[in-house]
Image (cartoon, rainbow, N blue to C red):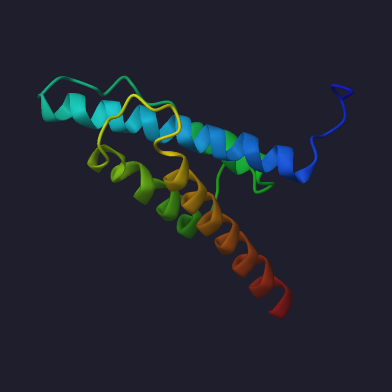
Length: 113
């Protein structure tokens, strides 16, 4: 593939889900550090910006989109930490689907109004 050629939609979806999964894992670990009362203020990655850009909505998504993404991150620490690499993949896929639905609804409403 030519580096200047954008990835196909399935490859792009896979990249986005992988990023969401990495962010969930990061927040899972940080959440568990907080439970141990360790300071974690400096561990913010802001991966959501890259996800939003890859989804074609820019670095600053609307509040609904951000609330969906952030809601999944805030609950990441509630999932058991496991050795399996893809343990959070189903959660990342669900997050991705809801984010896509949010974008689709917003675009539909923009066309209607």
